[in-house]
Every structure is written in C-alpha cells, then in structure tokens.
Amino acid sequence: MATDTGPTGATVARPADIGLRREVGLLGATWSSATSIIGSGWLFAGLGAAAACGAAAIYGWLIGAVCVIILALIHAELGGMFPVAGGTARFPHLAFGSVAGTSFGFFSWLQAVTVAPIEVYAVIQYGSYYINSSAHPTNQWQNIFVGGFTTDLGFVLALVLMALFTLINFLAVRWLAQVSNYVMWWKLLVPVLTIIVFFFYFKSSNFTAGVAGKWTTHGVAGDNGNGGFLPFGVKALFGAIPGAGIVFSYLGFEQADQLAGEVKNPQKNLPKAIIIATLIGCLVYILAQIVLIGAIPSDLLAHGFAGIGTIASDAKNSLSSNATAVASYPFAAIAALVVGKWLSTILHLDAFISPAGTAIIYETSTSRVGYGLARNRYYPRFLQWTDSRGVPWISLLSSFAFGVIFLLPFPSWQSLVGLVTGASVLMYAGAPLSLSAFRSQLPEQPRPYRVRGAIWFSPLAFIVANMIIYWAGFPVIWKLGICIVIGYAIIALFRILHTAGVMKVFDGDPPPLDWRSAQWLPFYLIGMGIISWLGQFPDAAVSPPGAPPINTGRLPFGWDMLVVAVFSLIIFYWAQWSKLPRTEVDKLVALQSERMGDVPSQ
Image (tube, rainbow, N blue to C red):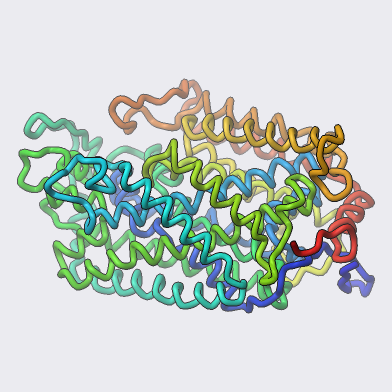
C-alpha cells in the first residue's frame, strides 16, 4: 500500500495508480493547467462579454477571477493530498462514497469530454477566414462557417481535427508534456504581444460608447439598453459571467490534478502548478478585455458593443463587412483594421495553435478521468488499461467518440459554452465539500499546501460554484440535467450487467451504494433546478429574439442570489453531517492503493 508520514509522525495511507508514469515536472504541470486556461476563450469571450454587458465586462472578468481563484486554492490542497489521475472525479468518492463519487465523477468526465469539441469549433470559426468561399457565401460544401454556425464541410473538418488531437495523445506523457511546453510559450506570448500592441490604439471613449434607447437602421432593430458603461444593468453583468464565456475561459486550472498520477513530486508540484497557472490566466484575460474594448474602431460602436452583431447582419450598411469580421474573429479582425495585417496573420495562426493545444490537453485529461472512474469501479475496467507508453488508450478512444457525439447537437462555439460551463462548475462544487470532509476525516494526512480558514473558505467556495451555476440560466441547467440523467442510466446499466453476471464489467464487485452519505445529493441537484426555474436568468431584456427565457422569474433579482447562498449553506452542512466515517474512508483509500486489485497494462 502506498503510504506517507503524517504531521504527527504516524504512517498514513494514500491512493495511487499503476500503469501511469510520473514523468511530468513542475513546469509541465503548470503548463498543462495554463494551456487549458488560455485557449479559445481569449479569442471570443471578450467581445461576447462586452456585447452582453458593455464595457462593464471588465468587472465580469474580475468577479470571475475571484471565483476561480477561490476554487483553485481548494483544488491545490486536494491535489497535494491525493495526487491521483482524474483527481476531481475521485475526491468526492473518497469523502462521500460511491453515490456521490459516481455523480461528481460523471460531472467531471462530462466537463472534460465537451471541451475538446468547443476548441475545435474555435479553430473552425477562425479558419473560415481562409477557407470560406466568397463566391458561395451560404453553400454548405464551399464554406466551413456560415451565419454563426458550422457547416457540413466544417463538421467534417471538425472530425478530422478531433482525430488528429486524439492521435497526438498516444505519445508518451513525457513527450506530450514537452509538446505542451512549446505550445504554451506560443499561447502565452501571442496574447501578451496583442495586449501590448493594442494599448497603442487605446481609446478611453469606447468605455462609454452607445446611447440609451432603441434604434432602427435600414430596417434592422437594436436596443442599447441604458447605454454607456453598463447598458443592460447589473443582472446582465452576472449573466455574462457564465453565459458569455468568462467562466469557460478560466476553466482548466484543475488539469494538473487530472494528470496528478503522472506528476513528479506531486505533493509539492501540484499546488504550485495550479496556483501559478490560475494567476497567469486571470491576468491575461483581464488585460485582454481592457485592450479589446479600447482598440475597437469607434465607428462600429455607434450602437454600443451589442450593436456590432446587428450591423454585421445589415447588408445595406457600409460597415457590415467590418462588423461581420469582428463578430466572427474579434481580435484578428480588430488587428487588421487598426494595426496591420502582420498581427492579424499571427492571431489567425494562434487561433489554430491555442485552441488546438487546449483540445489536446483536454483529450489527455478526459482519458485520465475515465481511467480514474474505472479505478473507482464506476466505469468498465477496460478504461484503465494502459499501453506500453503509459497511455490509457481505450479511455482515450472513448473520449474521442463521445466528443464527436457532442459536435452534433451543438453546431457552434457559443452554443456549447453554457453546457461546458455548467458541467465544469458542477464538478468544481464537489471540491469544497470534499476538502471540508477530509479536514475531519483525515486530519493527519500530509497537506503540502493548506488552505487557511477552511472552516469558512470551503462553504464560501461552494456558494461561489452554485452562484455561477445559477447565473448560467435555466436553459443551460435543464440541458445539463438531461445529460446527467443519461449518464446515470448508463452507469446503472454497467452495474446491473455486472451484478447479474451477464458480463464482468469491473475488477471485483462495484463499491456498495453509500446512500446515507449522499442523502443530500438529490435534494441539491433538484433544488438548484427549481431555484433556476424560479429565478431571473436568463434576463428577458437581453435574450436573443425568438429565444425567450423559459424560467418564470418569480424570485426577485437580489433575493434570488440570497436564496442560492442560503440553499448552498444548507446543502453544505448537510453533506458534512452525513459524510463517510473515518473507517470507511480508510477502506476506500486502501482499495485504490498500488498493490490491491489493479489491472495490468493491456
């Protein structure tokens, strides 16, 4: 059994993995998280956030940064305690048993498997600049991106890219980490270069662009809201944090935890990697939002940032071609208009490299989450089989297959953002619950990084996670609910097949269903759905035409967030009261030690 020496000198057990190789150092672990954070979000979310809430989008990025830093610190402690592959899928399993572990494990896998497709869509959208045929502006087989959606040809190219990113993942992890290191330097230098150059074209007047009221130009109607810095009010600001891609852009700090089974000296390197990567990502995104607002041509802002899309759809407007370009590939188009083709070319190239790097690392992490869930005996045992290079190859192929499935009902970057954000934050919600539980269950466990004030920090982090889920809006939450129900059904089918003796799905028996320690879980999931249905998000005032909100809006704005906070605290302390006893936690840790019931490489 793998062991450590606790702070009192006692020997304590820890879970461990076999078949994986610890070949990733501090830089590789840091870049695995940083390359996940700096992906397609910086290329798209800035304009989306400004369109949703004006120049006040800067506040949205700051609020989002505070939220993810709180959650990242929680993951830093957990990763140092239990450096195992697919960590976010396994911490709740150890703290609350199989029912909660299955649920949060599936949330983790769902989040990871949907990110690679969204990054592929980013490549497709920016790639349309070079591939789209001006002679056939609406032809599905001449263009790859039309009217905000991927075409038939674009879908075929998306499949090819998904396959390519999967093949790259068959490299040994040490080679993959080296590739990630090189890619990350590019991904970091290009945004920094863009931020510096755009500052030379900064116009402070852009921060109050747009006058109040509705307007019509050439038969195309628009609404500036109240105009100025915060045109659509505070509610729109909070809705933009998940809806415009702000939280999505910050996702990925947990990737070092997902690769923890392959990190050298993980107790020290993991916390450092997570914290450093998160701070880098927050700084880049906040500065990128500031310079994008300041550098955009003033003639495109006559009707504010929300009016850019309307101008783009108005064929009679002389600015429509510029607006269309800005709406499709914001930074590259603005660079072409105000700086020069040289920077625009670099940004179009970056639009392949940055999302591609993120897609590759998420294919890696998805396969490791599947590996971790197989070791928990939630997923079939063959998902933990590794090849001679230490790659969980069947889990990797399944990541590709399910990623392709998510390409089908979500034909664009923006359409998939909400679902990915909701699944991600639902996954993150399991971390503060687990950290607080481990503090009383395993007080002697070594914690190379220790969150200070965990007694209040953990419930705060849980409130933050649930607030982001609530801001995502009811249309996102009910779709996420459907995915969860389907996932539960598939996992239950595996269990039934194994228990009935139809086929040997797991190594040994699946873990017993710990209903008592997860009694709070159904109330949590259903309760968040009900609060969202009664709540204020999305806001009818800023919803797209033809897509009215299906939430009731019965909870007044302000009171709705108080309800979310109080509900979160009730669930948090209910979960702490019903967590597993110490003896059961020790058994689960022992079952995942190196010498018990492991499947060899296949």
